[in-house]
Image 1 (cartoon, one colour):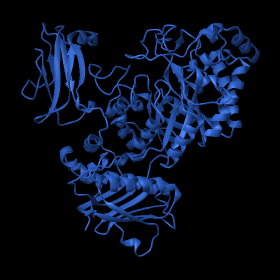
Image 2: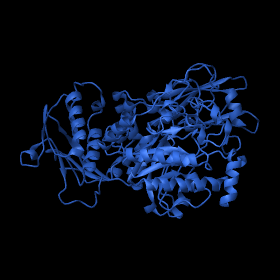
Image 3: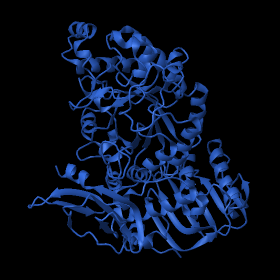
Image 4: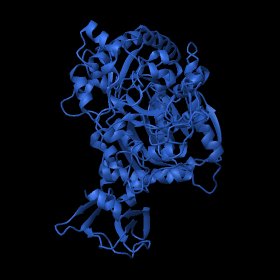
Length: 636
């Protein structure tokens, strides 16, 4: 008999450590009741489900896990007969749809009779299977056969459906190229947490990544730059004799294969062609797209600085913009959007529109003449004019346009255009007030390429977004018509992502938090509850040998000077249950060293403070070396 107690109420009574032993589903389901006991999977398993082409890949993946990893013998029955009702695992599509489940919801029941997942649509069964995988022991995440595991499913009654239809992740493959197989892997990893949109950033200053057959130079020249290692955006300028062999692109056949792979996992793929800024790869391929004569000498950027941000807005040291006064640009965009629209079935094409430097535009004779002819007051209105012309091109291909919130500047944005708000929520709020559909992606919550802990230990980026910041994400701010908010997404820019292992490190666990913000109702969400589930999933990642960041265990550091002018360090933790220990003598602190409680005064002759966190007798996270030189800079 299942206990009649709400899931949230149950977990609120438990400590993080105890909760980690109970079912830890991310994102948290709408309703879940867990009972005592579990259904044991026998050596031979019958699985029954509807024969459905949309689920063929899902069924195959489930069979592979159960046979290759768990060592089970699996037999499939593709009907709902009385024999099938005896199956250990049963999938069912409702003959009469349950309105409460919608297109992506599901019900999962695990009891003495086995496991049954019911849904209105194949997508619902797919998400129910993702939950089933999380209910199985963590060893199911292994890449090799595992022995000695009691393969069982906890008794549960789960009814679940998403808060938002748009649950996206953005992958930037332009700054650093990721292979076709790596993109597929990224899709597999995102759908495990019920994401359903891949926003694919395919073009930028550092590379053009998709084949456009009518414009072969885009991949012949635009897909390649000079390999550099170090800190992106601070590299030396490539020398003329350095080989431009680093990069890559996807053929149109590759694109079709990846789209099909996504469709089999209920993922829509939205391409982004970033214009009119972020276009150096296109201009290096076809210099006639620029209004700047020296563009004939431009090369694809290799990570060297070429934008000045010291003014609070981008000013180009080299003109990386398509020329809005050049008819050749619109002919180019007709060709590009024509081929892109034929390749991608998704209803939206993202046109970028962000961070467009206008210092070249402000003095260019062609653009100044266009401004005078059309009565455009400034370069913001020039970009707005460009956006309107591009929207006509995209609409003529049977697609809808989406862009970053800069496309609101200059006015006159076509009503059919959707806005993706990244500079906080304000752009999305304004867009919704103007009647536009909105996808919320505020950088202070969901930019998962930013540092996730203290800069003394994290790979350096310009800003920190901690796990708790991501968990605080609410896509519908006060005063906004919720019907216009399509959802949100986690954005992963790749300037500092040189390999897939580091991609995983930046993605997890923050993408868990964003997944829950997009799937789960706010009333079901609780920070301490979430932390316990994150720890359980970290254990699953250990089995899978996937990389993740331990930053949530590491301290938040605040350095100031006290009234006496002494440096003081205030240390706090993002999660509860940790103690912080430190040393100033270059030795490595452990749980027997002084504990930081309140502000710690830095001895006048110290040169470094070593800091570590503990839970009981176990070290958590990594030891941080905070130099006094760094403290002095922070105190200023």
